[in-house]
Image (cartoon, rainbow, N blue to C red; front, side, top):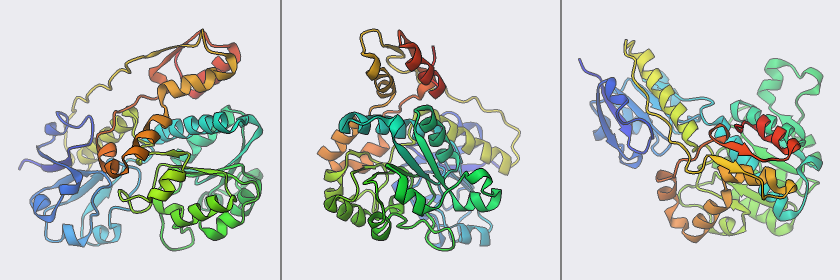
Length: 372
């Protein structure tokens, strides 16, 4: 019997590859309905549709593969109780989100005229993404504070590797969130940055949310900005997407349509992991040929004419510039879903070659991953 697969048409690098596994139909994620998935064996999805009893009951679906790191769009308890397997792509976009955060940090430093090496950053959530962000921030010379209670408990807080949220509140100039969205229990992250949290900060920090929208309370962020208890926000993830808060959008320093992890490299990896999940689950002896990642239009970054103090930011922004996307989203917020679904895939640092950099800057760029 030939495997029947329904895939989100907006997942890149998938067409022409998934067909090796069986009969494939493509639909936009928001058109996944119970009728559409009724006779399908496997689904390859993004976060657009929620998969629970209302859509899965009495269907033939045996496996849901999400080409994402998160799974709050999947009712995992229902799936586990009804023999529907589910898989994600953990770590697939970690480098992409780090690129987004690094570009944003450099932009904030430029706008507000401060030096990153003199700042302390608090990283809340130190999984695949948070670990990459930590490494990049250390390469930028920043003081780094890590908060991850599950890891601290499981691994032991050796040499004080992890700090509590109180320390983050008291000492961090910038706070960036990289947790999953967990609504209840000991490690709940829903509205982690709420009024209480934001009223307890002492350094007027910048807040970055490149995790999940509801990890930060969007109304509390607006109140904190108006009070001046925080200096600014970088928002990639929003509550109630795609109907995002227009007032917060206007107030944000950087505002993007949930695309921090949308590099070509991250998407290619997520697609590859989804295909491998299907192969493993259905025990298929197939070796599909994966599509090539596109080359960047300008792969060489020549820093000869760039002042030394601007070279690092220039190179990073050459690979990714969050300001361009901020301007587009602020101009047409109603196109949030369109921007996300039609995102021009960007490449990560290794796709670029740097020339004529200052020796010290060159070393940092190499550590970040740029080619030479």
